Length: 190
Image (tube, rainbow, N blue to C red; front, top):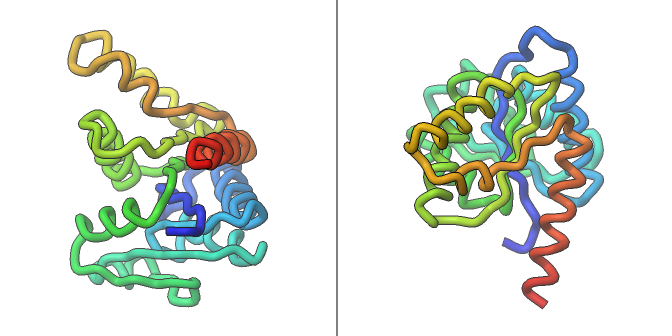
């Protein structure tokens, strides 16, 4: 994988705060301008569609992965640079994760949480060291951050769990953190 790719987990709905869509748009555009590929769930609705259209408009490379049973529901976005249809949700998550260098979480629902927790579990088990960025738009993910601290404080995870995520307030901040991560990792390989 020569291209730097960021897997974005986010809602297939827009949510109730216009700032959610603004951050999805800014993240897609920022990734394209940085020359990074957007890897995501291939939907053309909600924050997913917003991020993808924004990346495309800015000239970015897009890689979408969607299970067959969601093509109609999430309106599979077939005009992506690469569009993959899988049989199952498990395959979708695997293909998305295997084709990225980092993960960014925008606001979303149960599916976004499922994707995040699978990646965090893999990190906790030492299966990867990819950066995981939580874009906490207008405090949307405050309860999630509290829950992670709660899990640690009650002894169900080591404190290192909190080191596996980087919380940022906006898409612009996420781009800066990712830029620093990719810069550091390229220096490590030189």
